[in-house]
Amino acid sequence: MTMPDDRSAPRPFKTEMVNGMMIEWDVPIEMDDGAILRADVFRPADEGSYPVILSYGPYGKGKSFENGYPLFWKRMLHDHPDILGKSSGRYMVYELVDPEHWVPDGYICVRVDGRGTGRSPGLLDLSSAREARDTYQCIEWAARQPWSNARVGMNGISYYAMNEWQVASLRPPSLAAICVWEGLSDLYREPAYHGGIYTPFVDFWFRAVLATQYGVGDRGPRNANSGQFVCGDVNLSEAELAANRVDYGALMRAHPFFDDFFRGRDLDFSKIDLPLLSAGNWGGHGLHLRGNTRGFERAASEQKWLDMHDDTHFSLFYTEWGRNLQKRFLGHFLKDEDTGWANQPKVRLSTRRVDGGTDERVAAQWPLPTTRWTRHFLGDDGHMGREEAVTTGRIAFQAGSESVGFSLTCPETLEICGPVAAKLFIESSTTDADLFLVLRAFDPDGTEIVFNGANDPHTPVAQGWLRASHRALDEEQSRPFLPVHSHLEACPLTPDTIYEVDVEILPTSLILPTGYTLRLDVQSHDYAYPPAIEQAAESPLGMMMTGSGLFLHDGTMRPPEIYQGKITVHTGGANASYLLLPVIPMAAEADDQVAKLASGSLA
Image (tube, rainbow, N blue to C red; front, side, top):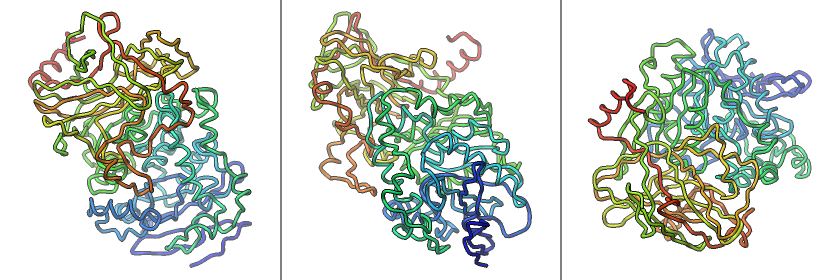
């Protein structure tokens, strides 16, 4: 049955039955200000009430994954052919669940085009308070429908996951659980400013979102299933489109500090108290890692789980393994099913090996309770070790082109798993310095070990960043292994004066065998994997992947007269710089440590 799109009496554009699945295209949802958002609803054909998996985002609910992102699609299916399974793939869209895998198991999938995107008119204002309120109202709308069991869950990747953190902090009564898959939880520190250093990824990403802005009309794609234009039936001019959006990149650049703008969009984790599964990616250095570990730590919920995996950004989400994990979690909280989730470890980690495989670790908390926080002191001879040097030393490099490295060759198997940090004593020949810290691994022959990261096939072990003028710490949130910087103002350096700085290096996991080398590089430019530069590995997004993915830090907001001076790292004595590693003891030692923790004899 086809119905016209009548704005005076909004209703679904079309309803159809496909292989036992009822689909309603372009269902209207009215907001408190009168705006009409549009959703596609996929539900079981059988009468009854079912739990809802809802998503809200900017990428176009009708934009086919296969046609919209063909290179991603082909590579994903090549690596994981089980992704389709019993699905045709025709209803799959980027970073959302596949209805053909969920509706037969008794779920309803509701996909909402965010305000100003896809087929939902309005002002496009990403990650805003208005967007969070819209999501809240969509959740409550879904809970009221006759086909709903009044329990709504959310499950999606990246932006959709970030949106879950946001709306959960508003506590919609009908939101029963969220599955946050590789989703940022700190708008300032993750997508916009790494350690206070601006990343133009924000501009690149915003331009990609504009391809699905409402009003692109027949200049955009058509939904092959419903026949509708993905970006609305009206054709707005470029000037009209610009007037209907907030320039996200310009907005981020206009606020280089954690000011009222960012505070207004920050999350109150004390209000996130619902069941949650946070699934992060060890290789998501620029965006898809920190949000999951920090979000898990900060959320007030007593029913929360952390799962850390590797592989590309979204592939595992769609695999049989990923679907099983999600359905065990959501089935437990949305359907009261006995999925075995009651016995799920609070923390499950895929621990990486140098051969590309993984082991598994489970624990009751994060960071792991058996962690030995171990300082490895940097030496002016380029080595690092457990012994602190008595005499002072220094080693310098030219910012922008050079780096200095500090190496540790493992005398026995070394496992690290958790947050990493560095305390450095530095001086600069200018009034500021951008520090890029890269943790790298090498085999005994000197060949670097790299990993297939979320967005780049050649990622190092871990990365961290800090603009030295942003060195002030948020004392309430910071811990020795996790320095959290306040980013409230710039505190310029006096040239040729020594300053103590603490650098957050993103969490990691790796088992290094005897004879392998762990190296900390200190530099002021992005990590680049030399073979990748030679091979010019191309991204499906049309950019060259050389080790840091899309998350680069070019000359934007980095004037060379300030950020290309000479930087000196001091070592030993009163200026003992060091790397703090989360060392996981071997099994026997770990059991002893757990026993001491339980007895209270281990501080």
